[in-house]
Length: 187
Image (cartoon, rainbow, N blue to C red):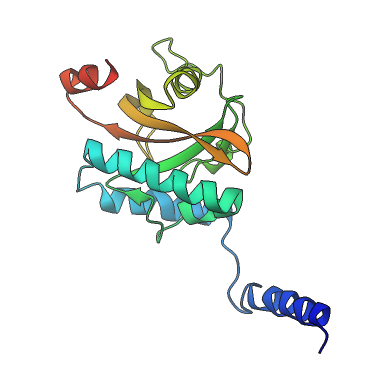
């Protein structure tokens, strides 16, 4: 067989292998959202540490820098390593457009740069500022816990990452830290 034919055959076989298995329907965004919220609730009995949050964001950035946006599905659903201790990883860009949010997929594609948190703070604008100036850091704001509607104080660790050649902000937050600990992190 000629070398070019072998390459073509390899791509064809890879296309067949990578197709969804018959009888294994793809999950809808709503099904994945529900799984994500259930996984958040089930894992919430353990509280994330500051080091754990930073480690997961770093791990997510490494995955996204290697796999690009094609890795977004790995952040959603009950079997994701990025849904843990009642929290999850999200990704937005420097324009403020939410690119991936497993708990609120309806936000994906929305520009949130001017969204205020109820205390007149624009968290996504602030996250982008920190990402551009420092590369990574902590931002505090008010946001509903997964599955709830009433905002609680949260502090999120964010990091600037290259995803398919584009700068994006990867983040993960911790709720219910004492105010003194939050104040220490943001200084």
